[in-house]
Image (cartoon, rainbow, N blue to C red; front, side, top):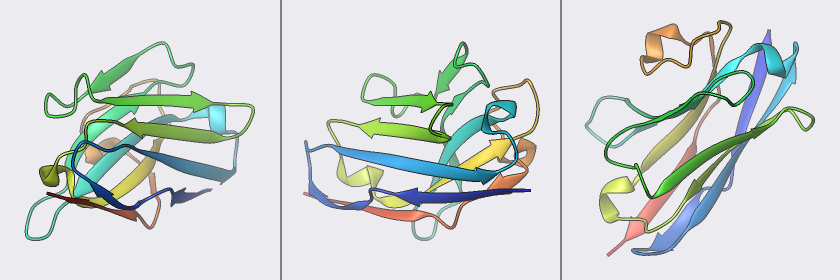
Length: 124
């Protein structure tokens, strides 16, 4: 079992920045690929970014590429999502997820464990 807890969400003006953190407890954090997903009101959950176990493979959704950066610190059992140049359309609940495989997958169905989410609201 892996327990995930996100933090760092909040209200920010368009053009601003936020840094999300996801702290993991339980089994060995470095055994998991980690992903960030988001869900806006009335919309389906969508992929944001993923990072492989060692950090060697990173993927982003086209909508956030160049603005968001995913990283991980295996010594701290934490994955981060640095979000810059935020737009109102980035408003959503952001979830981190853990995948017990070698893949850094874009599909949420690959992920075994999920955090409760943190709200990000970007005002125009």
